[in-house]
Length: 85
Image (cartoon, one colour):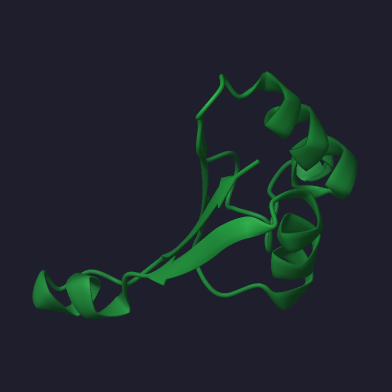
């Protein structure tokens, strides 16, 4: 599952999307994952508050910083939060 809604968890253009990045929204996503499924959440920058929430719902997780890759192609880097139930 790839969650790339609005402008990521740190800056929302539509406040109605905030629930997706809360513990309850992440828990709903976790429940919807197929067995063996993975969630990836895009963010334009690191977000400590979101990272703590994500860790509560997805204890098996990692954070991927694409800054180096972005620089190689003259684009900004992003942060991808990856989790498994």
